[in-house]
Length: 236
Image (tube, rainbow, N blue to C red; front, side, top):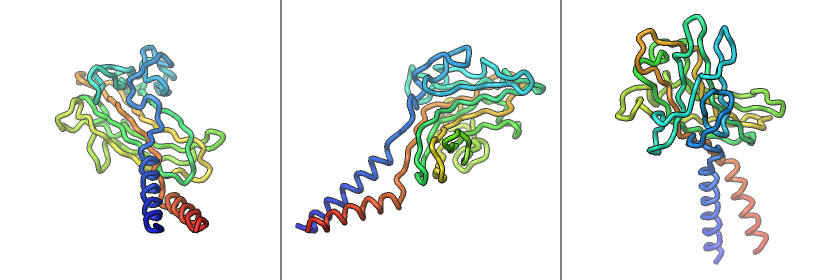
């Protein structure tokens, strides 16, 4: 009987850990729902869309939700960044991000799709950055930790490389552990210092279908297990 109870306890802990690992905390992570915010055209609802140009400042046409940028759901939406709205003398930076409550010591994993048109300037100019970030903020909204995935320099897939998907879309992964003092986690996709490619053509930088998952650490699962065993022993 004791062995059966111990086995059941173990299975419950495994199930609990699995459940924690699959809990996506993003709202509208698939970017399907749209709304007007800081941009002249609709962008993903529940996300902050921000764009500015180096010389002229805040800009309201740096990105938009578009059906052609969708990767997973036919008829859905993805986000289209517009590098051609910048110039070599007035480069554009555009970002999409969402903030959620976070817990210090917990590892978070961000997954998201990204791709690029063949003439996206970020594919040939290394000063143009195409990145995913996990940022950790404290109680006064100061960034106290930042993990960056450069989509052009990584061990997963080079942005825009042909792989049979439109735009070379690929599902990237970035993981980081929240440092002490963390209150908020920010999932961020950004295009930095982009500009119009004089060759013209397909210059899109596109993103879609994000998840942000807190992973139970070995320590937290051990604590759960110890608590369960102590409760079991107290009933003997």
